[in-house]
Length: 473
Image (cartoon, rainbow, N blue to C red; front, side):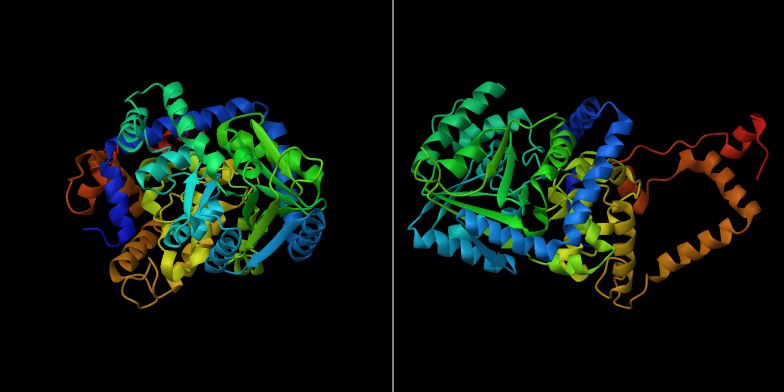
């Protein structure tokens, strides 16, 4: 029996073979595209180092850059609002919409709005929010949340989407042709753009030097959301500010290459103000809501501050063996995968999300590919240590502040074995000969339902090295 809601969701995901096939196919393709778009390993490492330095430099000056950003945006005609919590952010958006009598909103992709649970909040106040990103549109029809930071509907295949469109969109035929599915969504959404009183969007980067909001996308829906309705509201985490416009190109190169394997995204939108008198189109008003929601606490810790470098590319998800097997919804949080396991316990608290850092092999694949060099494996170990010390943590189910008796006994036995070479070698030898005979009982039965039975080599590393003439250390 699972010990928590998190473990229950994990078991449910592991039992879903279709889900696992969908993720294996999609994530493998993303990883391959990334390799193809960054063929020069040395050039990539130099670019990663540059991007990490850009983000660190901005974070080192975060308070003053935010003030500079507000000043520049205000001078450009963009109205700036500060939200300490998600609840305050939602209320600010609602007040702006109500002041303009808006009852329908078209929305571009925004993970910060997901963090705020903005759609549900607006719905409770009688305001309809229509997701216009294709992936977000799909999961909104399905009544679900995003399963991935970049590709919200990555957990669904074409047949599932075809059935969903047929059931939820009036007059839509059943088709698995991608071009036809796109056309159905386009026809459905086009009327919404014309009818909406406001557009909502996220922000990928905000440039303090010029007071510019940068949004990247591939479908053109983001440009429609920010340019067609008379009112545009953007929501952004306070960590997304950068110093100069010249900092954008390396970050955009890494963002698009790491996220979708593109050299450049289809649309790069730079917004520096509302429509001017001479402009043929654009919103009459632009508002920016800057959200803290726990980020200041993360910023205050010199070690954990590296978390805020994140550019939300989703690359760590695409290379994580745990995420690939359980998907995004198993985490039960807005941000899944390695970055979610690091960020969420800091935003929500170890008492509420202390289990997440333990859902990792610590293989380091996420850290290896992170475009801004976030030390994810190191931060996971730091958060695990905090969780073990917390009475409400994953490592303490009895409220004693210590691991339970069985775990302490296992670690004591391991410590005794590794200190005695003869015992250690005997255990390894036993594993080689008895490993294939493991009985599927107890915890092993649960594990072996979703894993291949381990096959141990008949030759150990020591013996292989000896045959190559390499003596024991």
